[in-house]
Length: 257
Image 1 (tube, rainbow, N blue to C red):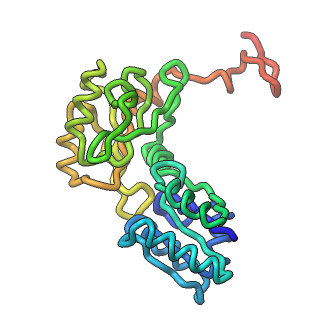
Image 2 (cartoon, rainbow, N blue to C red; image 1 turned 180 degrees about the vertical axis):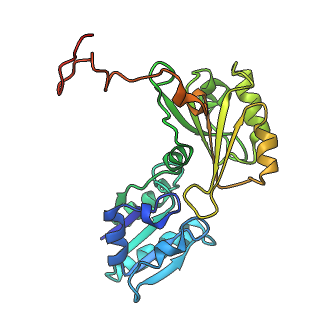
Image 3 (cartoon, one colour; image 1 turned 90 degrees about the vertical axis):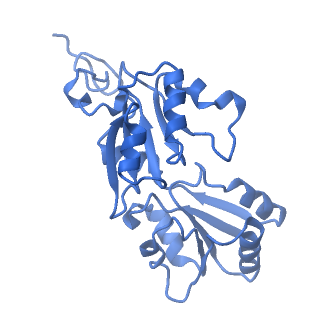
């Protein structure tokens, strides 16, 4: 017996993978997080498929439905927003399903962090500026481990992507400043990346809280911080070795000036 968890992507129904769409269209039962997943995508399921909204369901209730349907011999898929591996809450589902001897296949999806970077026209890893991206969240009602406090992570001075943190901007700014970041550090915020009502806000640490409040952004936002988000980065001389004509690699011999 098997259940498939599919990453739906960030919002645009065209950003699901080919494999994910194929399995969605083949499914007899489709469970989806209706508070986050675009209904236009779910409408691509076959007409006779049973479609179940799960935003109002708790874990055990949702898994019970999946187990019941798969034991009836039906092909069941569970559709998650973005990529299931990042803040997807799939681990607890898999744990219960495995106890029922049900195998789980996971189909990756486009994460909102990369959809947001695309919307901002940003490369998150700039040679000689930053080569690391930290994916994390600010500490709110759900705690973070002591070794992963934002202030400590920020001391790496790399690009930081903040999920689930739109209501905690004052805390975010304080943590970054305490870590030694300057007030003029660029920040890019993307509300509902790839949705029709997507909104992009370019700011700095100093003005982040005011800018988000002015734009009414309190949820469904990706916050990207660091100098890779500099709006003028394209005019600065940061270049990789990959396309440097003087750099030799396995597919090309470098040419000296």
